[in-house]
Length: 320
Image (cartoon, rainbow, N blue to C red):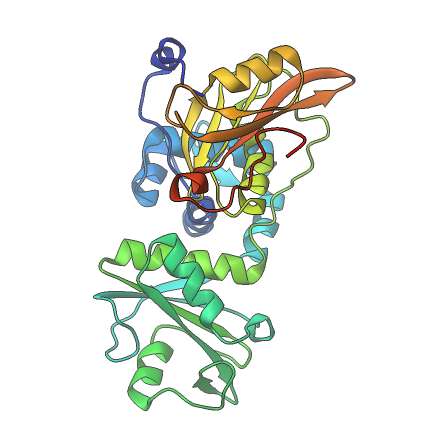
């Protein structure tokens, strides 16, 4: 699969790159300051204006924001979505609790029943790019490590309680990394996983058509990306450029490829080794998306594990 350079160049601008963290932080920023202009929001998110525009389009399509001449503001549905993923975020200066140079603590109210042992939050933070994460829960007005009765040392407890108004049942996740931005990314990503993700409407009825944009394919593409363990996923509609996702991020929202185009044309699943583009020499599987017996889009998975000699997820022939 390859990107159409001619069609991509007409769009201009950088390739959008964002994660669920950035969508959450958009709601966080709008909750704290509204309305916000797109340029101001891009500065707060520390991503490009193209990525910010893509996020705003997604939120607007879900009815979570409204955009007027004064800027962007949350709708009532947007406030409900924010409340379902509510987290407080603060930098934390503490020694001995973490291993990174910079720490970010988040407070999730009344979520201690969702925590098992804390290793799940650590692993999610690491997968997001942080060095690690430490999880604490509040029980009897004391911060303890989950899965045990061990309390944190008094100095650490004072430091954490100076950041938040902590109540019984609250969860504290401290992300750690070489820089604060990555520590926050790790902590918030872990928090979102603990809460079950962003409650954004995933209903595709009346959304997917042969003219669907990459934004309209995002929910489906990310769902498949998660199902196949983070393997790259590409998708496009018949009449529009699509998206390419790797490592939980949209790395191209104006993408097309030879195999995607071929599947849309012939209307059947193709398993083959890509002969061009960013996945040249790697096994791919692409399948059509049909509506009323008409192919309206195609979506594919790239088996990058085959490069490392791992047992293949993708069968090259239907009889294998």
